[in-house]
Length: 124
Image (cartoon, rainbow, N blue to C red):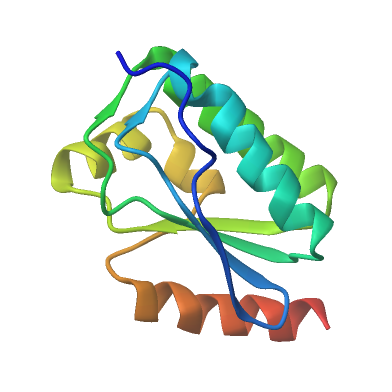
């Protein structure tokens, strides 16, 4: 397992819409990095956070719990959290664990941004 990695990149795409690149694995080893990325997104005023999961290779039970925690934190902050780029196996994990009920999944970035625009309009 990799040692401490730098926080995933946080990209401001549209006003108050942030994309966070999820690392190759979501486990206890990447917890601090993901929490830091979400804190950074909140600090710059994100209302909508989109997780780019296109590079996700592995998620374990700890990682599932971590994503649930991120969803809960985002909801408490009044943020909308979604994801895109999951492979078929990870989409099944999201469905089986019911993560997809709280974190909508989209096949690509453009679909996630379209949904984010609708979510942003609904929140205005």
